[in-house]
Picture (cartoon, rainbow, N blue to C red):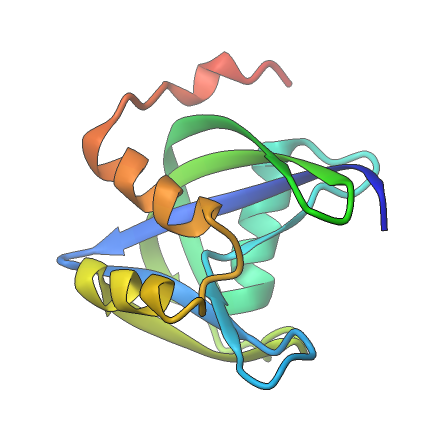
Length: 146
């Protein structure tokens, strides 16, 4: 799979914990990620991230900031342009999760770092986005012109 893919991911924090999704990706162990997914045709990154959070976690959110555009190249030759967002959770809906999602978890930064050491994070961007959300810089949502 090569080419360029536009995606959106969201760091959602409540207290000392972050909302993470556990996904089955075909390997022997599941992996962990922020709620994230592809920007669909006709969708903006803002619309995509709100939809992906709802589909993957059944949470309604309020976007609060933009982390920026992360460019990630896989060893297989695929390039991802991943829009990073920060949001606060509003309420959990009674919805079925996407079939690829094993479970959702509220994890501490230390738990996420442990998963990183075990190579259980979906990509290096997962921890990077959390650290960026905690230390900045972050940007107003208005930097995205829709």
